[in-house]
Length: 226
Image (tube, rainbow, N blue to C red; front, side, top):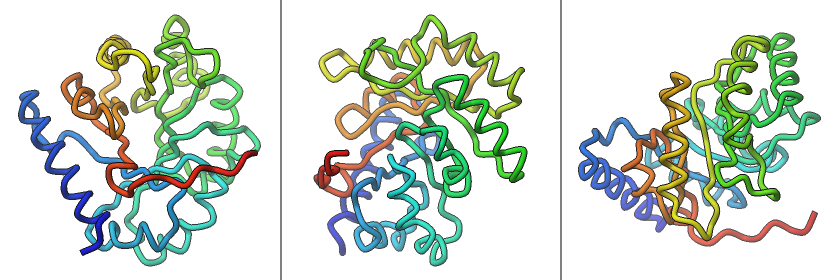
């Protein structure tokens, strides 16, 4: 058995354990297997093991490997979990089922415009910059309610939930609690939060999706400098 398949099962078992400790059903939490920087040969064993939900950071990278994999596994669902440039929206909508990183009006406008042209509308999550970090994408907490309203009312986008990446040096539970609070007051049921190092904490705070890469696929090859 491939090591990644063993790792996958270990993560699924751990999610079930964390859900039980939180008084939740394991089936209420979906695992997004983050396959960024890993090639098709590395991903295929996890697909053959039956997993169908994956996350990628870059549109161009996903375009290089997922169309072929989807021919073999047509029921895959693919999430974009990295920043999206407006000039990549058309390609992103052709590739991804869910955009988790909507974070500004210009991007929301472009997604709505392209979806109207193509008839293909992905589910959308709004990325919240819970730590208000200047170097990080996402809507700051003070502005997120207004942005959610404009996405729904002005652009007609299907906002399903929220996503965050807590600051690495801070206690993640504070950020997960904040994201949950924002979601609750806006009537959003989906929370994408928690990665390899903190997904058990995220589950305790209501995560419905956890994004796990290293714990499944192993260490990533760094991206070359842009």
